[in-house]
Image (tube, rainbow, N blue to C red; front, side, top):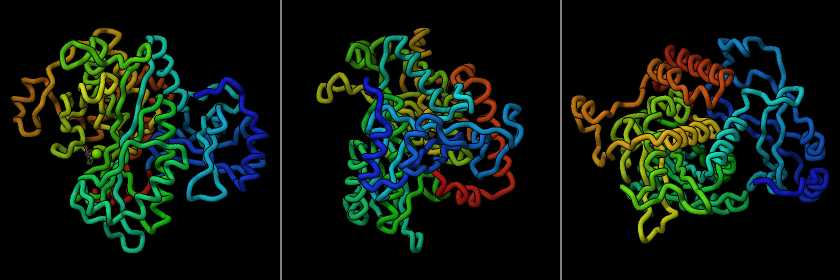
Length: 455
Ligand code: GLU
Ligand code: MG
């Protein structure tokens, strides 16, 4: 959201200092879904807003284990510096953080040292798709659901003992839940609900729908808010796609819808309660799934999470309120009203960069709209229980569960290449290759442990 008036950042910095804010953390997300950051003294904010702070150019080729790969030709040496610029387009862009007295948060964008666009900046990738949607006459609404596992810092035991979705489980984490609700509100984040999820010690919050940039920003600030609230009550939150081999996965499902002239453009009086736009939007998503999920659920942990029977989107099909489908239509009803229609992408998790995940999702849906893609029949069953012949006959394939297959799908997707651009795609693939090399020399448990706390 951009205020029409430019922000007086010197004045804002004074106000922050009057409020005893000593430093401002500038956060951004790399190609592994890891939130990287730099903090600056509040007194420096005005200068930093103009010129940014210097960070290495090779953040785009950091892998999930803090290794740096030089396999991508565009970033093949340790030389180079880019500018990390705080995005301050309104006074509320700088958030005084709940539970971290003296610190504030602002999202960052990366620019070349001379101020030119930096092709590896993920934020700009989403901005381009928001513009593309606007050019086609649409606004996009988006919201992430965030699942996480909570354990006790002292002994690593589960913070709640279930049962799934129960009040008993929530009572075990009562203090945390209250603090989290307060902290989310303080940090300007709105949620629909909080509940104990299916997995051991698992919880979920559903962020309220926003425009795409704000939705990605909110997903990042929500992580900071959850981690901080957990720490305050002696708990630790894991956002990893699969926190341990015996647990349910953590999905960060991505809900999107299109708005035209103030109305939900997916809703209509055609088949499935959809408009023609709605049907072709879903068709675009389903068509692009193999390449899409290589961005929205990209990590070695994502591949392990992608198991049939866990509602994690293991197969490439769509259904109406079918939680086993990778693409789930959440339709409007007379009770919910016509603006409720949205589409949930299950194959999305915390190891995705939220700007890239949203960018490819929007692009996939819009590509379907642009060429009036034909929507296959919805499937309302658990196709994991079908044999291969029946799935083949229905045109349903499992999504990739190996690095090689996922890499192949990624490189075969002209849509993803178009959205990311050659440079960023090259860096992204190099990161995935580096992760796969790490995984190949470690056990599955070592891999899951290495990813457990990084998101
Ligand atoms: N935990 C499941 C996942 O890995 C999702 C459960 C649900 O549908 O909420 O995505
Ligand atoms: Mg859930």
